[in-house]
Image (cartoon, rainbow, N blue to C red):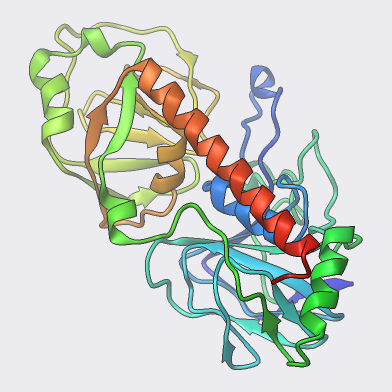
Length: 336
């Protein structure tokens, strides 16, 4: 079976959880900007959580499958409809062959993830199917998707087959389960609460005024925001004493401060080395929230300890495991 792209979009790519182990060679991880939404969508279709899916940013293309399919949507709600019928987020959805899935403007957030049972069967490059468009690497021909592209779908797993059988019994053209899943509803309180961070490698080198200003002020995401990183506007931050730095490791969520003083938050396609001082490191669950911000949205920051960061990560993973167990139980019980 194939998925056919019927229209152009702002930026739609194939992503999984990224390629690890190659940063020492200058190849970044890439992968989903919001990995929790990708994992949720995959689990809802019976896929392994690392299966390749679509990441759609701000404007999504219409798609159609040339066979019956089970899909799930998570992340930003882009007003999806199947054959003109609105379909819900965070649920397995059955689409008969030839059903056109369309999207509108996002109600909240900016990145929606669409998983299809079986996953998108594009070639694996360095252990990942993720697209890194700047290097023309991975995904579908190493680029964003355009009208006329056709992507192969992999073999449907057993859980996906069970879901399809459950939903076909509803005898509706488009059907979905009465239950839903999703630990991260995209709402205003979710998006705009403070982004928690731990001290960066050069935190103590910044002036006391700058360390205080990072938490006291609100920063705006500029138009210079993409999968590599977000440039922010707000109060300038500065080192207590200017100094030259040797380039060092960079990672997802690093808050860099270049010479002009405006923060840069590194995202999924960040460079592997960086030479700007690092005032903070946004925790992993909150980088997923940052992925749902669009230009013009604002960010505030809250410093926490490493121990607190570890506990938040552990609790988030427990929630993900509980969600997976709940989905599996519903499938085994016939989708009720």
